[in-house]
Every structure is written in structure tokens, then in C-alpha cells.
Length: 308
Image 1 (cartoon, one colour):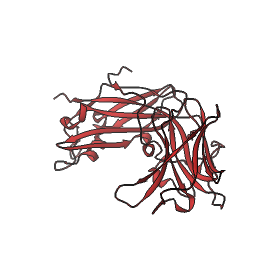
Image 2 (cartoon, one colour):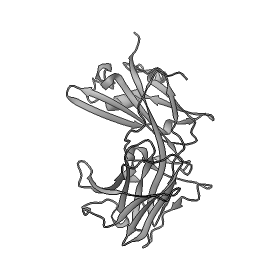
Image 3 (cartoon, rainbow, N blue to C red):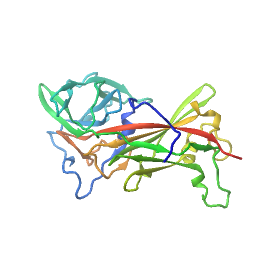
């Protein structure tokens, strides 16, 4: 499909929470490296994060099993965390950063590095306590990002059905993205940068559940009217989309992440903070959680005025 969308540089920091907004619900025949968490004194820490080949910073959330909320977390966990390249043996130390979630006294430890992540490479995140490895997770990154293409943009103003109509006009408020040369899609996020006077907003919506496997490629229909009605901070009476002039740089961004070869094939989207529960499936040994390998790419999709 031809596309006049503008491609962003691939080395872009993507929020880990947005890329791992999932609970991995695996049925029979799932990846044998993913085990169900069973409470035990030997389980020390939960690990959550994604190693993104395209990002310039990697972050892994580390939390003690007995304090997954991290309320009143101490300045340090007293552990050493490193990332090991299993193909070369290189060890990369991760630095601790204590982060407070906005509006709540909830503090979490994100261990991070700016070390480049290689494609098609196996990595292990290791937590050491008193020199002994107590918790670890192993994953492999994809060999390439998705090859993205899309239509000529999306049209505003949005089209709404009449009071007695079914929403037969949904296609008039939808644009389509194709992702090729990947076997697994790990995340799809649409970012709408909107400006209202002095207010600059960044509204983000997941469209992972809309991904359709077409065999030789993945198709992602994006019903943007539904997003924009929710994103509009100043709606007129009744639902409405932001005006075309409110879009910063007159575009939206579509971020699509390919999952590595051991990325679970079945999951259901949930916010990352809701994944930390005892019945979640996990690829973490000596703990629970999930650490995955991804490779993302992003398109800028232009906003266009709908012909009258």
C-alpha cells in the first residue's frame, strides 16, 4: 500500500508501560518457558519491562514480592541488577531510579540503561542479592521492526450518525495501517498530540485488540473518532472531535512493536500495574512478572480536512 505518512526515527523512547500493557493468558500448548507463578518463599522479586531495540533507554521495574504496590518504598532495594547478553556474555549494569506515580504516594524502582539493545539477541535480566542471583528473566529480541504503511491520513471533522441511524459511517472515521515482515505484534499505540491555547496534551490509545492477522501481513484498523471523542477536553454539547487546527504539527503517531520469538501468542490487554498478581503467567525465575523483547517503529499519519 502506498503511504505518504512521515516516518519517525526509530531510536525513540517508548514508554515501557504502554508497550507491556497486558496480562499473558496462555492456554494449552503455550510457550514452555512461560510458567504460572506459585507463591513460595523462594520468590523474591517481580520484574516487568520490555527490551526495545529501537529505544535509546531501557527500563525494568523491580519490586519485592511482598510489596508489589511499593507504598513507602525505601530509596534503595539493596540489590544489584544487570542485563546479560547471552550471545556475547557481556554484562550491563542497570541503574536504579525511584519514581513516584503522579497523584499517589506510590513509588516504584525502575532499573535502566542507555546501552544499545541488539536485534535477534538473547538477554537475561538478573537481580543479585549479597552476590547471589535470586531472580531472573530471559527473552530474545526480534530481528527487525515491522514494515509499516498506511493510507493518506485521516479526515476531520469526524462524521457522526443521525439519532436513528446505526453507525454505518464508522469506516468514514477509520484509517488503516499495515505491518509486514513480522511474525508477532506486541503492541499498537496511537498518539494524538493536541494543543488548546496554552495546553499541550498527548493522548494515547492502545489498538492492539484491533490487529487482524491477514496471513502475509497484519492489518490495523484505527477507529479514530472513538479516540478523539475521549481525547477532546472541550466537547460541544454531545460528543465531538477536536478541531483540525488543534493538532500539533497536523499529525497523529502510530507506534507498532514486533514481539520476539518467545513473545506469548495470546494475551489480553490490561494496564501494566494490574499485571502484578499471583495468578499471572510469567517468564521470571525466582519471582513473577514478564520481560519481553520488542522492536518498534512509528509512522506520522497526517490530519486532512474532510471534503465538504
